Image (cartoon, rainbow, N blue to C red):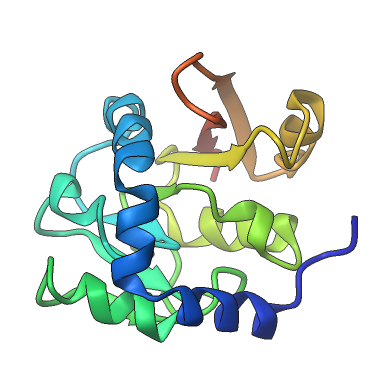
Length: 176
């Protein structure tokens, strides 16, 4: 499978638009969020690939949502008034160790370099901070998903799924 083209991904989500995204994915994403919330720490959380911001109200007032799509971020602004950044998940525009935790739901399969996304996520997350990543099971087998996290700066705490979600969910710790 060749890596996705960033411009094509951005265009696809911009064309889908926030309202259609919410109609299509709200219920499915809500189930994932309930599984993920207990693994995240308190404090500043980066929602790396926040889409329309569905998860942001659950993450608290110090959360920051980042997405490549201007259309999805436009919809996110209807949920949160601040803390939204249009940027690339593989080139995060934040200083080192700024976030207490990081979450990224069904984004990693849409980036050109999953390892770069993970290295950047680890860079901006404080030492020992939790990072929770999910990917659609139809994109990666469990061992392929686990192999995405074979980086020096990351410890894999657990990878799990549930029959009522379509994702693999990895709970990771930033080592440094």
